[in-house]
Length: 76
Image (cartoon, rainbow, N blue to C red; front, side):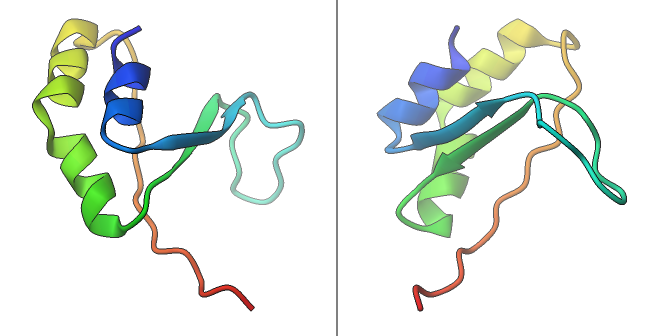
């Protein structure tokens, strides 16, 4: 309830959320969320921001998270 609003307030746009329809090779059938930011710096700032860190403290060990920040490929 806290993490989503924290990401939106930091400029994040939710592109996908839910369980994968399929997973291949090393993929895992685990809930996934894809959030777009204007830059890597904006994504890092959102993660390190007080609002998201507060959400993590509330959740505690309630979930295992695997968070990755990637830089998008230039548009073709």
